[in-house]
Image (cartoon, rainbow, N blue to C red):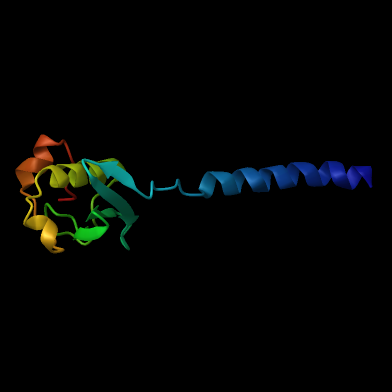
Length: 118
């Protein structure tokens, strides 16, 4: 019995470790920035998109790359956060009245040092 337990313990440990390494890191569900809530999500093509809320109302839903309209979204989480924060800073009061997708000039990506999936 002890022998089986000794043989089983390393196998269970290896199984646990391999599962822990394959689990994807959690995406922060919500970021508060300048009076807005930014919620990141993963796109179907393994990129990232985001929603921007103002006073619990959805004002921006960005499920494509705003720089080049790629359906892959933005390549990484940090770039999605930088883009969403830039967009919050450039929302006018009129923009907060209705939900929209907004194209962002490619020059902004260059200024923010963001890969645009081109």
